[in-house]
Structures are given as structure tokens and as C-alpha cells.
Length: 362
Image (cartoon, rainbow, N blue to C red):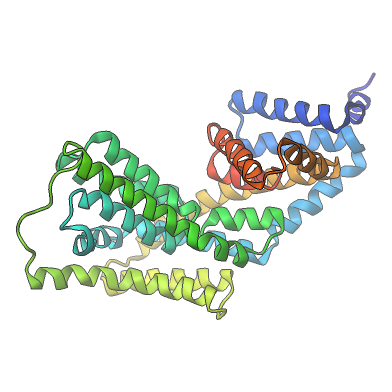
């Protein structure tokens, strides 16, 4: 029996066994250390040929083309470029210092400042990795130096950095919208309140820990900040908040699409660095290189996941997964909790881009 004819036998498995084989093959290849993009592409090709024959390969290419040619996808490198420029400027540092005006007079104030800064950075760039690096460089050393509990300090940085998945303009939502053919603007609208609720819960937890456990966080500074110092710190808030208002305001106000708003955001961040006298062409070139590396990873993972989801849908995967989840319970809450458990397990071995792409399959 030839290799090609053995591939065609995959259709005899049925959707139930086929799903198990597909998932097992994905896990096996991921555990070998293969990149996620190559794993998903390889599995998609194997099942396309094995389930439908060689004629199914053009279906994968058309699916991939529709993904990468989407107008909304242009916003991804724009938001990544925003994060790269922020990473190389002093905007995040000044923004962190300015948060003393809000949280400087409470126990655990530096940790609360970190959450506030994380929300603003998420609303400016929408990417996770750069935000965690910025918070780790700016906030973590200061919290450890002041005597914060090490686990609390690291947890605040990691939790605050993860807000980029929820607070618009989230790249995770953009990737998911492209994969699932859902309006990205609607996703931003739906995620706005939950994202800020999550940040509020983080702040509430930090305050609870700080006031119930004196060893978790140091007391606030006793001396009152002078008016000139407050005005100097306030200046660090102006430019970041203007960028957030222009980006999110243009989207929610219906003035600009997500793609157009991303270009506005990049222009705003570059203008901010010019006003702060931090702009230089080497800095911009370095940010562009980092953007190409990050977006290249996102594109390949998106291509692989898009191909895999397309093949699985043609196999009848949507109906199977829908009936499987519906069979768990008729209670919508139980169904949502089941999906959250699946995402939690996926987070143990997939990065945020892979989860965003695979979430449509769930």
C-alpha cells in the first residue's frame, strides 16, 4: 500500500476517532519541539490529503490566503510596532512614576500603580510580551527593593501583563476575529468591560493582601508630595492618555476602523517620542526589526492554525464539537466553565497566539 493510499484511509476513522488522532498527533509533534506553526501546517496537510485526497490542498491555500489578505490584519504589525517603540522610549517609566498621584498614598501602592500602568499600556499596544518585559524592568525591581512579598510582586507583573489579552486593542482579539470570521470591532466592544473588571479585581486583591498581611507590602510614604513634583509627574500622563483616547475613541466613536486606528496609534507614539526628544532613526529601525520578528511569528502561527481549522471544519468538526459541548450540560454556565477549562489546559503548552487561533476550533 502506498503512502498516499494509507493517508486516504483516514476518512474511515470517522470524526470522533479522527479528532482524537488529530489532537494526539498535535500533542506528539509539539512535545518533540517542533514550532507550533510547522506542527499545525503539517497536521492540516496530512488530514487534508488523508481525508479528502490531494484535491483538498487548494482549499488550504485559499483559506490561508483569505487570512493573510484581510484588511484588518494590517493592524497587527501596527500595534506590535507601537509596543516596540514604547519598549525603547521612556514613556512607560514616566507613566509608572505618574501613577504615584493615584496610588502613592495607600499600602501596596506600587503594586496598584503597576496594574494601572498595565491597563494603559494594554490600551496603547495590545501585545502581551512587550508589556510584561516593560513592567518587569520598571516595576518589579522597585517593588522588591521596597520589601514587597516576592510572590505578590511577580504575580502582579504577570497578571498585569496578561491584561493585553482583554483590554482593547488586543492583538489576541484581532487574531481570533480573523480566524473565526467575527467582527473585530464587536470583539473590542464585548471585551471592554470584562478587561477593566479584571483589572479592578487585581487591584482589589492587591489591596486586600496589603492590608490584611503587613508583610506582603510596605506602608505608604509618610511625607506629602510637593505641588511642583505632582505637576511634573502629571506631565507623564498626558501623552499616553492622548494616544489611548485617539486609538480607542476613534474605534468606539465610529470615526476609524481598527486598522486605521492602529495607524493613528503608531503616529501618536512616534509623535510622543519626538515631543519627549527621544526619537531617533536608529531607535525606529530597531523597533521595526523587532516588529518584523514578532509579526513573522504571528503570521506563520496564524497560517498554520487557519489551515488546521479549515480542514477540521470540512471534516465536520464544528458539528462534532458543538454536540460534544452541548452534551456536557444544558446549563450555559457549565458550558462556559468547560470552555474555560479547555483554554486553561491549552495555556500550559501553547502561547497566546496559538490559543487565539485554536479558540475558534473550540
